[in-house]
Length: 240
Image (cartoon, rainbow, N blue to C red; front, side):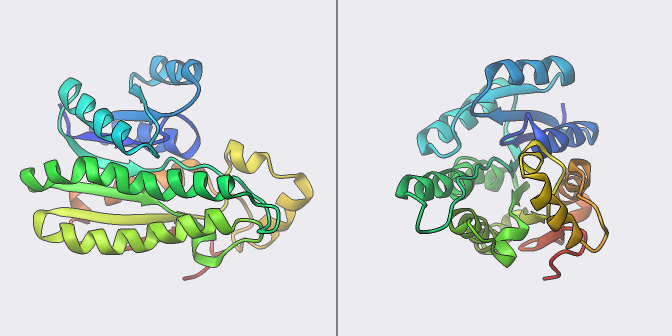
């Protein structure tokens, strides 16, 4: 059995592409999800990848979920913190609940999953964390003070945890995707989407597999000397 990798939000969109690619790389993959049981079952039936349901924004649930995975599948060697939500709106229209829920899941989920998996990685002398940030955490985005703050926080979290993990053989890196052709982006009104694509130098949206390839590299032994880094995969839209 290969090393065990948990991908949060791993049954759909970018998360699904990551789950499938890590499986191709020889990892034993577990896909975490929070919502749709039917879609998670369909994903598992199609891929053979086990899906486990818990809320990454719930600290106790992450502890229990990782313990269950360790017991039923094996010790957790890789965590890809991909789960995220949006609750967009300008500051004047945004409620505290909109702010709090995005911070709780998008940024809090990274802490919760790291807290659950870090000690075991340390004991075994090997581990990988890959945290999915965003171009909007680097450049900001109108109507997304919550999302941009959470994603920006992920980049700082990555650099700090990388310093703690390095001497134990644990690398911690981030990927900042640009606009990727997923259901979330498909929901953007066509005139707005056209303006977004017009600002991408390569002239198109990214593909989920292009993000997955970056995760694949960062989880490999070939990336053992890469830690505390952010890989920007955005078609040149924001060069940072």
